[in-house]
Amino acid sequence: MILALLLAADTAKLPKWNALPLDGSAEAAVMAPINAMFAGLEARDPAKILAQTRPEGGATVVSEKPDGTRAIRHESWSEFAGGIKPGPERYREKLLDPAIEIDGDIAMVWGRFVFTVDDKIHHCGVDHFDLVRQNGTWKVLNVTWSSRTTGCEQ
Image: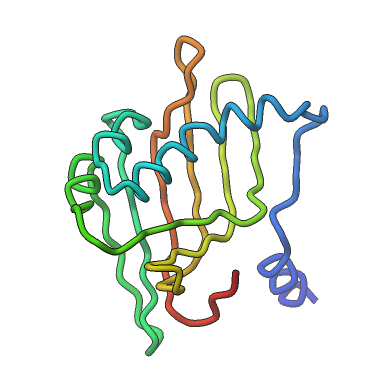
């Protein structure tokens, strides 16, 4: 029975836990730096991405290869942004139905994503952003995501 509960919990959507309903403006404020990062990615502009982050944070990806093997890679924000190079391809990352949790000056955004190159699915997974607010401005401290090339849907 315990195993069944664990398996069910593993596939369940992350539940909302905010005691009070948020009015939408709080979530929009938390999403603003994430959306700006995505715009910077689409523009292939590292400076636009870095402008939304706190320098002590970074980016971690857990990649799943088609054979099931996994690799973990962590980069500082400058290393991450340094990998964004100009080019003719159009990048787009779309976050699908994110869960947004806010407690004072910390926030978390978690959701499935699809990454496309020239409007064709390249990979997908789950994004997890943790953010902090300082002097009224939200910044991304860390982003962690899973990445796979199978089972991707928009």
